[in-house]
Image 1 (cartoon, helix red, strand yellow):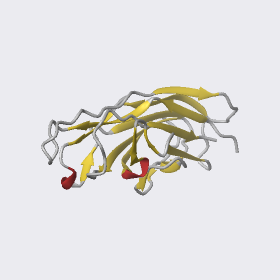
Image 2 (cartoon, helix red, strand yellow; image 1 turned 90 degrees about the horizontal axis):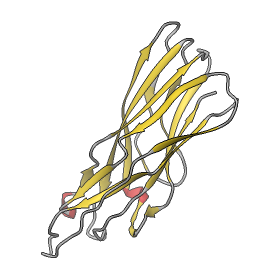
Image 3 (cartoon, helix red, strand yellow; image 1 turned 60 degrees about the vertical axis):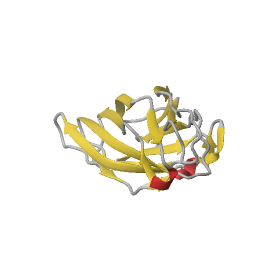
Length: 189
């Protein structure tokens, strides 16, 4: 099996704090950066027409740590277009954090962020269509975890994977501008 790796550089999850914490002290906004796709050259039978991740920034507006989970806004979308696949082969999408903590905010672990695949939408352009399904939710770590996967189609298939991020806020998390870079890998034999 040959593997195509796509690394998305610069997706930073930024934390945007409210203007005042519960103790009355002012906070600074927390924010993130955008991705760009890089293709690592490896041979594969299936042609990857395109691979993209958007938006570049997912922001968590952490106003009240007592509120618990904070949903990142907006959610991310990964778009993959492949052609010339085989119905007997599977494709898989993985994501991982490049660091175990947010840069500049070492009290905030990457594992405080839960990744959830909300949907996999397939648009088929002829031939036998492929398939796609979400994997279960998981906490981010520096080890890649599967977000979604499915079977390849025999002509051209366009997969759109909708992903959401939630952060378990805590009073231990000191507000700041704290990026976290994520790497997405598409395994397409």
